Image (tube, rainbow, N blue to C red; front, side):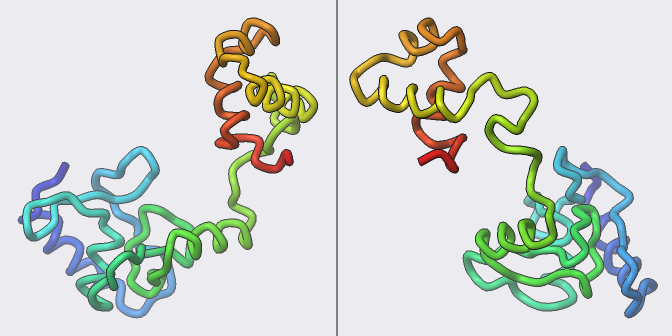
Length: 158
């Protein structure tokens, strides 16, 4: 990860030079696995670059809120593209823009489960069968059975 004595001046100068342009301003340094620019914050901790840019150029982030992108580009730190909102606001924005992850349930080509099987798994589990027994009975692994029964996946199945 870059040192704060290098990234903070870079961030400030890049935003200054970018001016009021509506173009994305993409972080050219280290990004995490989700594509968000990361750096060392002035206090020595780690921070996402877009959050630091918001704090420096817009103002403090109210408690409990996230810094979100209107441009949907994780490495962007253009303050014009940043706004605060809750996790629910982020989910709503994602869904409205059609950025939700791939197909759910049986529409996912990698799925080993079906709607009928999920319903049966939930019934069998409610009747006391273990996840190990469910996995053996239906020829699946315990983890997808557990995810489906606990509604971590297949939430759309009543």
